[in-house]
Image 1 (spheres, rainbow, N blue to C red):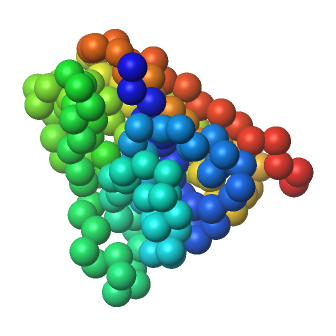
Image 2 (cartoon, one colour):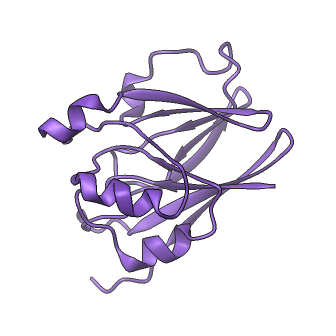
Image 3 (cartoon, rainbow, N blue to C red):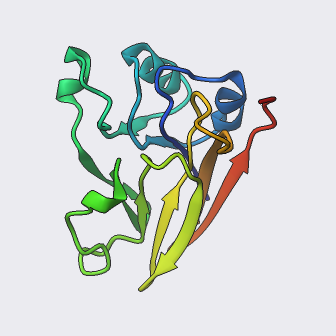
Length: 155
């Protein structure tokens, strides 16, 4: 079994709750709007990291980060991008089982045409009344079990 941590929209804030949740992951996918290169080093200390550039990642350090990434975990292909509205492939036709995104700050899990769409929400600064959250994928063979966890952080 593989445990893939999902995090997005940190905007430079890597909360201790998110770090604790991601500890023990086999891989971490960051869905963009990172906010600070040092944050990626902290995640990389936990597990290998795949990251995509978000619309707010405009500093020089972020220029080398791709806008989309494919990740293979065992038999399962993941596709990561920041803004789901900019999806530039047909995931089902491309053999992708999971699309990971961010941008909206709204945690969501949806399945369409055999493809899971997972947005772990925002693990960074609170936006409006949205929760602070992260997610995970448990992958065993071709079976993927997604989960989103909302952190109990006072408003």
